[in-house]
Picture (cartoon, rainbow, N blue to C red):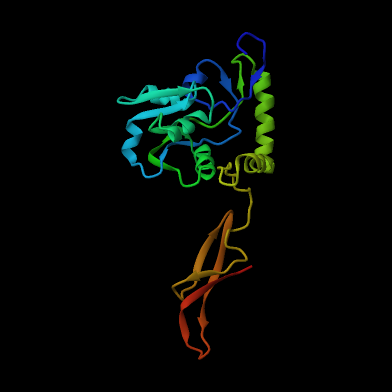
Length: 225
């Protein structure tokens, strides 16, 4: 891409400070994900200090290079670090959390997560040349539209699984109070004033009585709507 042969890089590339010094990135189209250490079931956290497998040139490998007391084993294929753990060639593999859970499900009962979780990136974005502002602007616009209409989260769930982290949608402007039309359990019988976005509102706390007409300990918040 830097030589002008390609315009963008769309290859699941994580956004990092080091990469951002060489190329530019769009806003993330996949949220940041934690990395975790995967070991054989029954291993303890200390296994993360032994021989650690990671994919070559991945952010996990770059992180491990900066750690002391760690022997890094690099593999070309994304699945190879976990396979190295299963074969005994490595003590643990440092991989993306979603991939770790997929591997644990595939090799049911043979793998576990040990050690601390590590946050290594700012999400996954499209790489562009630093002098290609028009391409970045077009891609950012498309990603923003997909975030706003929910289609990007739908794709994340479809292709990365329902356990994958979606983007949090911003609150809608001029939305009604969160409590409007709802009933809430409470523990006092006093009238409560509730502040609503852009104005004020009120709600009564009314007693809930049992069959004998005696007040119970529960109260129900009934909004004025």
